Amino acid sequence: MSSTLLFTMLLCFAFSISIAVSIGSSAILGLALFDPSRLIIAPKEMFTAIDKFPLAAIPFFILAGNLMEASGISRRLVEFAKSLVGGVQGGLPMTTVLTCMIFAAVSGSSVATTFAIGAILIPALIRHGYPTSYAAALQATSAELGVVIPPSIPMILFGVAAEVSIGDLFLAGIGPGILIGVTLMLFVHVYCRIKGWGKQDGDGRLPVLRATMDAGWALLMPFIILGGIYGGVFTPTEASVVAVFYALLVGLVIHRELGLRDLLPILKKSVLSSAVIMFIIANAGLFALIITREGVPEAIGRWLAHALDSPAWFLLGINAALFVIGMFIETSAAIIVLAPILVPVAVHFGIDPVHFGIIMVVNLALGMITPPFGVNLFAACTVAQIPLERIVTHLGPFVLVVLGCLAVIAYVPPLSLGIRDAIRAAPAEVAPVVAPSGAPAQAGRSSPVLPGGAPAIGPAATDASAPIGPAATDASPPIGPAATDSSPPIGPAPTNAAPPTGPAATDASPPIGPAATDPSPPAGARQ
Image (cartoon, rainbow, N blue to C red; front, side, top):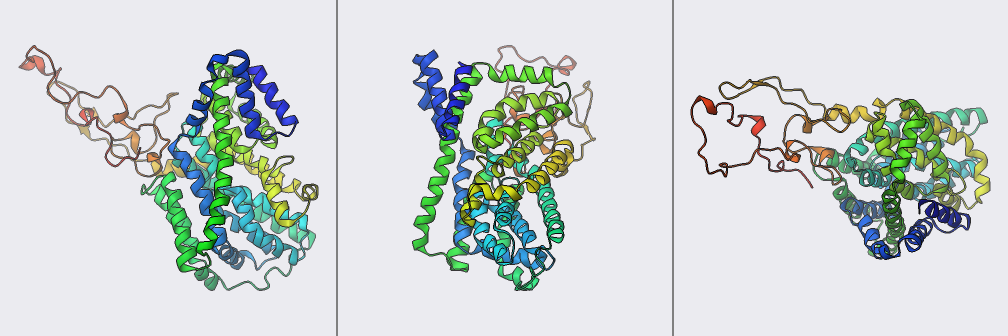
């Protein structure tokens, strides 16, 4: 059946059938040919694939990005970024990258970033003498940061598909996002000096203080969204709703550039974008279920473990494969299908699932700026009003820069995991635990062990208190001693025989202290 699924999907791709329909039709055809009695499960599994609370963040982040575009937030961010870096040669391309970094911290979508920022900066770049194809290629590449810097829709999808903490993924995306952004700014500055472009980029820029005051409400938004997530105030899903209400407040009340008549077109646009992604997820969920029951993930895992005998070779091979896959398969569909297959293999090689998730998101994001199906390219070409073939001439250097950053991200794990580990690290308790007479005292608490033998990191490894911040995200598994089945029962033992008394009962007494913690869920934890 698996070969039939693959052949049908590739055949649909060859006839330019949409990604979602290709994946879904191949799955349904496989069921119809080999197990018609199970066709009844297709609608159920498609619904189950999207019936996950964390996925509710996707339409809300899309809506928040569209509201920011219409409420003047994106324009103010452009002026702020231009006041910081626009005074040097090549300052306007650097402004494009920096604005996309800031806008990415609240939108979560690269396509939304392309339209919101590109509509302002692509015409400005053309007016300052930059080639139209260069302006479009720069905007498409910079908008990739929309899915690398948190919050990020592909990170949410990876967290749901691979059962990895979404909050941890958000933390891990900060370092790589800054690396890519800073590298792109340095590259465009040097490139413009070589080409002699952008000598008048500083004309018309506002003073830093005035631009900061004008963009104050826009700049406050990333701190509210990300600060609320990492401070444990709300989950990533709830943060998406907060972003929508904040964008409405700023657009309707503060900036007053958003009217009630504008809301209906914005809602329609957001619904259409969300429906496309959800339809892909539903079909990919059915496809993933069938190939999992056919044993394809286990077979691929065994082959990779045998063919690639070290973590370094595994990362090299996977990055090469994902780069090619990203050129032809939409990012959301690729994550939903491949993440459950590749994450167990990565864990087998000792690679942290969060680190692997960042590698996968950054790599597949390259597919958004590579022909033939790069969605950012189509969006940038639409804004710049040029055909796709013209943008390719200036695209190669940008792709090479991002590939270099991807190599650093893949082989330097602290770049991704350093912030998470620093936040989650807690000093170990060394005070002895009070024990019954005759029982040895426990020196501190033992940390729960994750699959693979690695000790758990963060507050969950030290006590059963409520996790603070991303550990309480919707996709996170139960954390701490409360998640085990070995907790001692509460109340008197339901036995008929009276408990022994005297010294003989010493060893049978339940320990006093952390070992006898209440097995109820940690207070304040979010489910």
